[in-house]
Length: 229
Image (cartoon, rainbow, N blue to C red; front, side, top):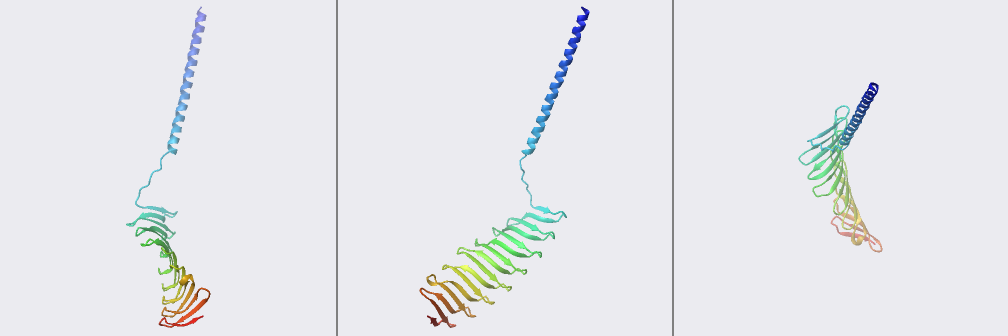
């Protein structure tokens, strides 16, 4: 009888040990699940972090030497973007002037070489400049159509290409900015070339009339002196 009691006691102790081991394993598994849940939530929160706006008065971008190579700022007209060279001088400027946008391209001396903008009349214009800032070529869009002005080093116009109510026009000028040759579309949709004197008045007009061409000559008072045929 005492032996059977001892055996039962031993079996009870063994069962208690097994139950304790099962409890420890259960809590360990729950702990792993809890840690995994926390890590998953943290990763999800990181990947879903909303993008925040950056609010500032100006923003500068610097190169490896610490010099500014680009910047965003503002003035009384609006925003300005400047792209600079390694010397710190601006090469491209984008901004607002007179309630319209513009883009300036500058040389190594910091002076504009080309500018694209919208004028007060609402027309877009592209100017190509020399180092002194004088216009060399101007491209402009108007209600009538496009125009191109080619100028000399003195700033005076030498060639004008454009349109009028009849069609296209080419105007070749002298150093005094006076017209010397004008070619375009004239009366009854016919082609016409005007050769002009130093005073800008027509001396010879070549016209393709209906059926045949004509040549007219004029004096300084614009009086007709001859016609062929």
